[in-house]
Image (cartoon, rainbow over all chains, first blue to last red; front, top):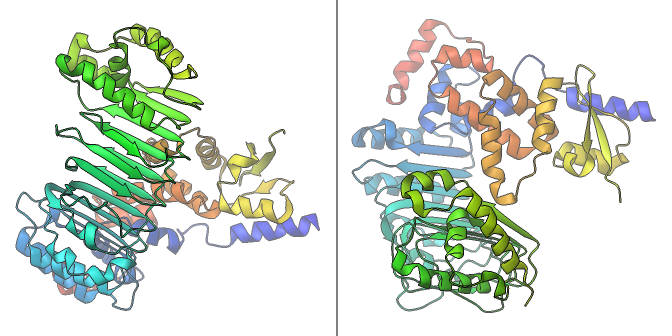
Length: 362
Length: 146
């Protein structure tokens, strides 16, 4: 009996040629290449000739083309591709200084949505959301959507559209300013992961997403301090990086929050340090349910500037199990900011104080 | 409760121990454990001991979930030779460890994209079954891409 099972296992794993790479592996490697490269691979052998045409992915990248050629290339790819093949994932990258021609983007999006694309990633220096908005009726197909840009594109489609199946949304360089105070993300019932990277958040960011478990916000520019209002009862992971700390309002205290990571972008002016410490402590209170907290050395430095005895304050955390210091930026900081950064020995002393403060049960 | 250990055996009959809760990141192993408790040695007849040692090193990693993606990238980056990466990808495919397979294949793709066709054939062990004339005909037809 034992031997029989052993034999079954051996056969199961041995099934396949030893010398050649299995086709599934070849295809998998091919799926990570830009479509231009994948097409070139059709010259490798007869077997490889049409592999790319039925791949469920397209990676269109304009960096090897001039503007006109890229459009021509896109036309050919869309014409030669097997139209019955499923299109699961499409990435479109156009980081030319000149903006990507909208007619090319429109063609690509038309093709993608008419072939039921699930995962869409657009990286475009100057993203114009109009061609994208033409497909409102197909938004329900999307499972992952990433849009990266540098032009603070309007987030209007995300306010009005219905994204019934979207689980991951990553926006970079979007303007999320929300004048009429409608909560952001109302049409995203399945959203689990949200990343807002270098977005303009306006004065208030209201996020209402019942399934959201993973939220990352990073602000690269110096904007006015914003208020974050979260109605996200299933949030487990929260990461914030910015020049300033947001005022955090939660409706139910984030009951299942597990991990919090907080980092500071750059070092603040001396005159602003006091206010920042207050903001930071108030942010800690907002995420007081966290069980694991990771702070960067910059945050630690800010905390050690606290006037008075940190240890004497009540801990903002009620059930902290793990406190980590991320010192990855320390050397870089020492070079950039010289003496204003924390020294390693100081960090150790300070760590004791911060630890004592964090563990002080209120 | 003591942690249960599994034993994996490589192609060259070397034995490796790994804690069961780490080993079951491999869907293949997870299914075996579910099926019959996998009390005996699990043979992996296509994975040599060097590759298996790498796989075990990967499975034993202690990473917070948010750092995991960076870790797996760095892990394959440090083993940047194509033959090693292909062995690793093959092992990850057999053992059904998706993240590791993706990372290894992505790294291979990243390396071969600047290769000549001949170099790609060599790296991926592909035989060119076309005559130079046939190849030229295709080049002409797909001029827009090359």
